[in-house]
Length: 459
Image (cartoon, rainbow, N blue to C red; front, side):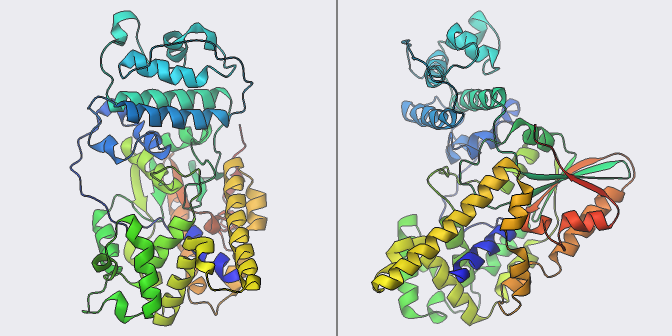
């Protein structure tokens, strides 16, 4: 049971590396400048998938609109606004007016301020659509991007109206006229993570620089990391792990679009990280499963904010690549079991099945607690719940011993350099939440250096 949790802790502390899943190469079409600031929220909430980058100028289809209204409905119900009768009948089609009507119908069952004004008036008041009269072009076919932006704007506006959204584990460090926001990340998308609260979105968009464990825009680094995940000595995965485990891995990844000849190229730790990432999601994860640090990076990058990586892909890859062959095989076997859940308990005794089910439940409940603590900015509860001291004290575990060694001090040093610079600057540093807390963490480290560091008050 503790081994299962240890493996999850590893994911929560390392950067959001790219899972080794099959993906089609597509030719992206440039997003119009007017939508730069909105694409990250659209994608994170799962309003559309990768087609936003290729088909955004094409007319929205009814199927795509249905997906957007379903997401909107799921988000609005979480606000727990007083319900009312949703009397009203409106034409729903794929024109701009029809899309607005469809979105309005999802808000109509709730007592939002101004809801009775009608679709165009209500959504205009929220800033969903701009202009008046013929300027609105309500009869024109609505593009995929326009529809997605309408849905995103409505969701964000209604969340802002209700003072709702995820707050994040957020601290503020100040010194020498500079400000550095410290956002502790849990590298996943689950527990209805999105949308972020307006306060957090404004802090991200107001930063001059956004720093992460890794620079997610560094294609050279990504390519280097990808190469580290694969065998280059003429051997394959089949030569390094038990035949039965090999077959189980192949069967588990086949439904995800990975053929055996592709799987065989990867090292055990690369596949193990993929299974860990997959097992961290839940029923609320969007199809895009955009981890929160990737969202912050996309949000900043799309707005032209400078992005910087504190560590390198080679450094993080080496953490795993230096693990012994035996540890890598065990790591893969355990994460595969986590991914398969109770399907992996076949052949166990009833007593063993009960123990295994309890371990899986404990693992899921722990991650859910951390996510809820993240969403409500309960930094104290997270610090008490997340067993960083246990991880650091377990020096016999190969992976655990690498998670913090030299990493906390390096991140503290980076923050110190930022806060020491001349002038008056504001930045945001987003790294694993485990690096923020504890005696060796960034928050305490900056306090020890004389900086003022406080939790950002919730609005």
